[in-house]
Amino acid sequence: MGMGPNGMLLMFALPLLLMFFMSRSQSKKQKDLESGLKVGDKVLTRMGIVGKLTEVGDTRVKLEIAPGVNVQFLKTAIEGLDTGDPKNAPKKDDKDAKKDDAKDSKDDKKDAKKDDKKDVEDAKKDSKKDDKSK
Image 1 (cartoon, rainbow, N blue to C red):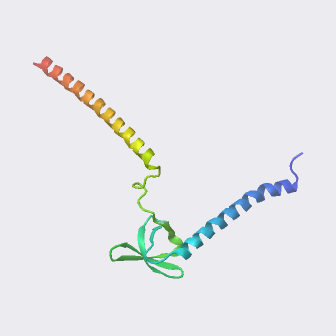
Image 2: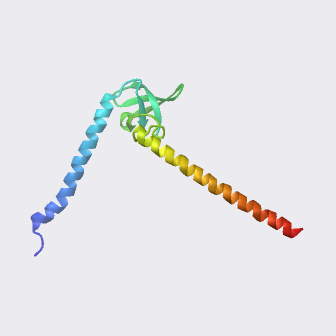
Image 3: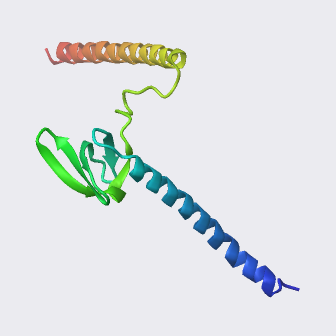
């Protein structure tokens, strides 16, 4: 007693409908981004290039990637607005960031002490070897 034809149809149609609606949502977001672009915006391309928009046309934009270096891109190649360097922008609130920094500092000190102890032990071993060889 397996599934009837309606059950089989539903099993294949549901994932297809889900993919269709997800792609429509992404397409709408991209169109909204493209329509909101203006000269002076700092943007990120799909290739990872960051630059400032110098011209915005119907389907293409000019992006200044270095002083005096302008490159033309399709609007669809723009991934989004550049919000800055993610390495420098803390994602946590300041209190948590300070706690993490303090913890990292303590860990660094512990590692340094371990390295110092190892260096002292290595030096003792070397001096014993020198004494034996004389």
